[in-house]
Image 1: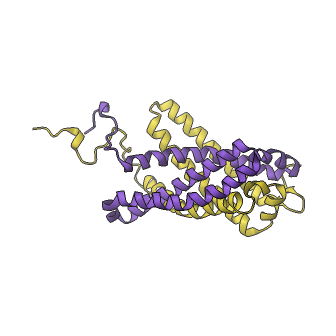
Image 2 (image 1 turned 120 degrees about the horizontal axis):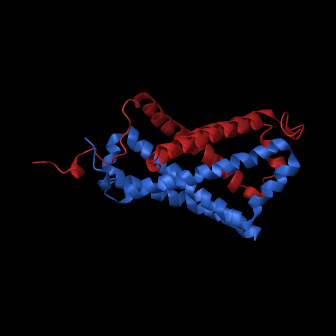
Length: 127
Length: 144
């Protein structure tokens, strides 16, 4: 039996759906950066002149803001991924899924604040 | 009396998985979780060491990478991260393409580009990490 197409995807909203959406968005963004990062790092194989010229782009203040954003995206994807894995392998945790999202957000703040502090100092230095 | 479709448990959308995709689907499901756990350690470790500690990305230049890749430990770290990251990312992109691209032709084309990109970048990254020669200051086979 097929669900009529006009119903679309039936979700009930809330933090679970938001974390699902953010997991996708952060995943795709990280993947697109990864493609560029593999190519720029591979330039190491072509000697110092080329690599140093290209990698200097990362010292630009605007790119540093993107680097900080990337850190925040990666951290979310990592912690939320661990939450998904925890529920998958310990199904009972699904009863506490909202609390688990709270744990993820708490850990996120604990780790993101020092990362922001150190990377923020680097950003200020680059101005 | 008919039960409204919307309340039928387990029926979420028309995006049903094709029948017979069982073992591969299960394997990729498991791979995503396993690689995910390893990548949390590798990527957060990489980010902390290269982008946060010291002067962060300010100190990253050819000499920095060259120094790291003279150690088999960091070569292994970076290569594992490359391999798992690319496969984890490619599989995620495959799921996203299958969810949102409904036309068969466009879907096949995007997936072909995805698989080709994955293959080429894995090959390029592997070549550079394995053949990098710190004494020559470049790859032993790339860059002339």
